[in-house]
Length: 131
Image (cartoon, rainbow, N blue to C red; front, side, top):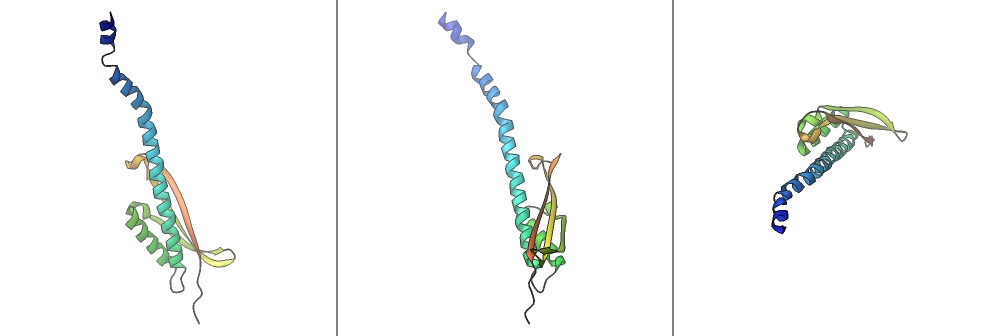
């Protein structure tokens, strides 16, 4: 009788593996998606801030800020995230400043389909020219 009971357990490891995989695979893919979105968001924030600082220097302007931001994004991740970059003068803490705004959509797991819309901005106080 013990032989028959042991024989009925053959193949149960496969079933256990599938049951555990059904739970762990979506969890792993969800963590991967969050990591991808956070990476892209942090890169866009850093590029927008760098672009704002660059455009706020004494001999630069909003067009230079947009170009610098696009260059930073293209070098770090991909050109498609640099399509919607704008810069405009705004007051920053009561002083004249520059705001660079970047809008992008991060596709689900990088494969396409519905995505996460990100809108980030960077600010910098404008420099005064030396006299």
